[in-house]
Length: 65
Image (cartoon, rainbow, N blue to C red; front, top):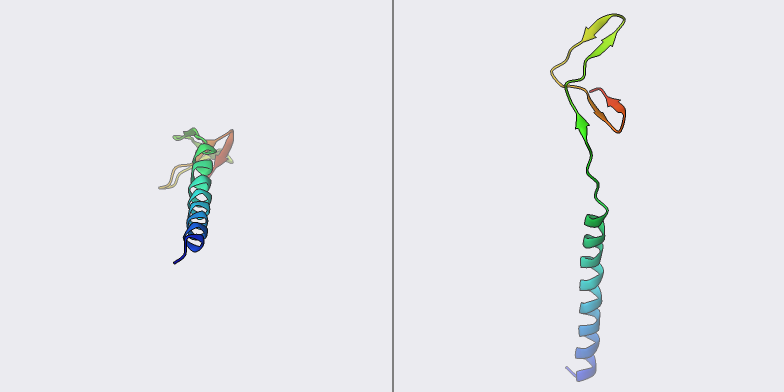
């Protein structure tokens, strides 16, 4: 291989490496921590609803399975 082809391959390799590793670092930095509260009682028409899977609250929204 000529020096020119080796240089082009090196530039392409560096570009591909920085493109893929840079996106991973960006994705990790935008991760958020969510506080979930369990042990919520759901009452519907005066009766408490029970299930094997517990409901939970995230950001003031109740999620019921």
